[in-house]
Image (cartoon, rainbow, N blue to C red; front, side, top):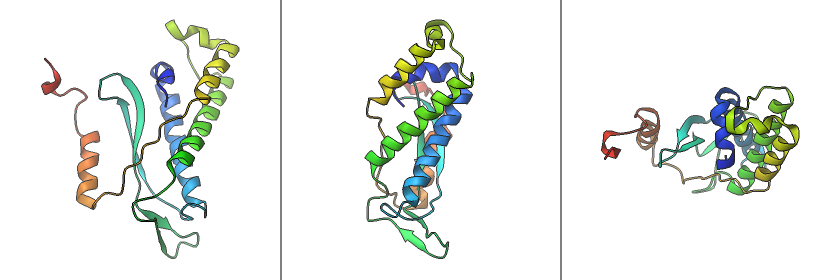
Length: 172
């Protein structure tokens, strides 16, 4: 999600992080099921990462998706094209829409808190302006080519799930 939303996420972790997972899962499942793209029901796992490499708050998900899924009747494996699972631009735009729709819904039901520098966002117009500004930007969905096998998947996941945020080697 864009940097402009990171402070909102920091003040509303549960609500925003839940929306992050919901929007990502709905996006992946919907685009993968579309016969124009894969036409299959996929599985995946997602890991929340709340900090970027520069140690600034940057909530995002790392998703591991197999290179295909089950056919609609559940009887056969549908493999993706070599080196390509789903179109990144399509994923990005659907994810943005689903996430921002969820954010607006959370605001409407009073599920978001606004403290200190974000207090002005409690005003409906100010909140709508923020959402409109991030809706106009392109959101980044990054996709890597498929892994080489289970050992590489476990190694990748281990880097994001079994380490501390700040390694001693990064302290001067």
